[in-house]
Image (cartoon, rainbow, N blue to C red; front, side, top):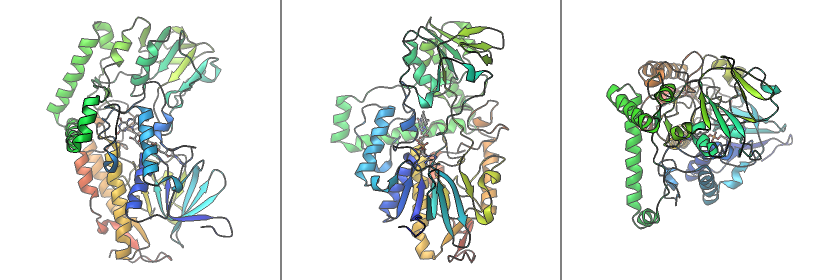
Length: 500
Ligand SMILES: Cc1cc2nc3c(=O)[nH]c(=O)nc-3n(C[C@H](O)[C@H](O)[C@H](O)COP(=O)(O)OP(=O)(O)OC[C@H]3O[C@@H](n4cnc5c(N)ncnc54)[C@H](O)[C@@H]3O)c2cc1C
């Protein structure tokens, strides 16, 4: 549809085409809602699985669980999906469920404003275009904007430098001296791959993470045949994996004995894989397990004991044209610097400018850290929902599971809309404040609250990213819509009529 001003419109506008946007599209279609458009700033679907192409990139959750419930019987080659395989899976879902025609590529949303008089959202794109929609759904995820540390002299460096999420495939590590800055979830996947090829690798770590084993293996032809012939065995395995990840959530949520068990597992692996006591000390975290994302791998520690790898614990003072200088004065000449420094995870929705009722700015509302009712709805921003929003990340489970809870919730809301006869729905400030209080209070009991710096928390230590319970609890709480938590507007002139 378009008006004389060349403004396109749809009932629902979705921003982003990763697991969030694609799953949302599937659930809308299932509910018979076809008037939706997905806007994607890139030229391809896939989100983080399109962007993170570094060697060894893959998932930490077995594929059976890290896949949509409506398309889980997929012939996965690996127990833990590799990046290319997961991207192919998403492409397959887009094809199979007729989602492709709904996606517009190279359409970066820069602004979205709620028009209070008309009760509609107006989106503006980087290319100058405009789109109007009754409902706006953000599916931009938590981890799509790489974070680069600000280090003195960085711009002077004459060699190759890039972030792991923007891997430079023209760079050949063979025979090179490489600095890797950061030792988180991405570094543990690509360092073992390139350590075999480089002449020398310096790993600059701020603080070591807890490392637990991940038993990666291809799905054998026997297992494949078994899953194909007896699909319930596959489902049973999915359930088994689900229960294991739920048990891990137990360890994060203030159950000391479960936390101790996890720590023991990590300590045993460290002791077996690193024999040198000095290096072991360097690699032993000083914060509770789970405070930062647990690193799942059996490859990382063996890579660090290689003779051509050095773990550097001192802080970086500056980068020169050819080297990295530490605060202890040591200078290490390098050919390349790879930043494994994660993502701007707590800056939800940035750099988009989102304004709600009476022009209130979302970034202003969130200046002390993002929060949203059930991670999805914000008071003052009617008909606006977030997928993978604040406090919906899980330390061990599957984000895809969490996303599907949110997608079903939003579809339910839209389905009940006709019956209740509302035009706009806005979560109440009281419901959002109660929810925020609960998150804050329960966060203080979790291991995330420990003394560590992690992407789960803002600079002042507020947990804005992680869910504080089990996946089952989140499922239960998003199963039904509590309409007493919403203000409903019955018509387009936005006359408030209160609860049904
Ligand atoms: C390396 C890595 C490994 C991970 N491993 C796991 C794991 O093991 N288990 C797990 O559960 N989760 C994992 N995650 C988390 C992962 O982010 C989620 O599982 C999931 O993929 C999130 O999907 P999403 O669609 O919400 O977001 P994304 O995949 O980030 O997709 C967001 C999309 O929105 C687009 N976009 C952003 N802004 C705009 C805009 N303004 N206009 C238009 N389009 C826009 C982006 O281009 C992108 O395509 C991992 C993440 C990374 C980075």
